[in-house]
Image (cartoon, rainbow, N blue to C red; front, side, top):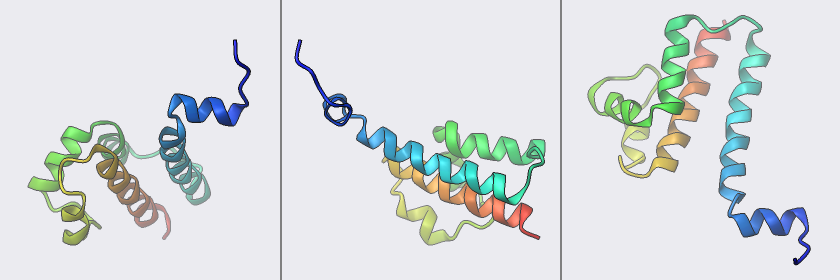
Length: 104
């Protein structure tokens, strides 16, 4: 058995990309905590869930609806196929939504 450092193991397992996306999600969680200690209203919680965990539905909403605070250029930028880019777009959209909702 070959000994590995934690960094070597992370690289060997290909976890770098996953860790980067996790860091982006932590930014959203931190932003929400800074803006409000209150729970998300159900309608907002549903939107957040869709943007972060139901990417097929989020993609459909990007194509079919005019999402609040989502610039047309941003919607087109993800290209419609790349799941990682779509997730990143969802994370940015959720940040905008949280700021609009709680930063009053």
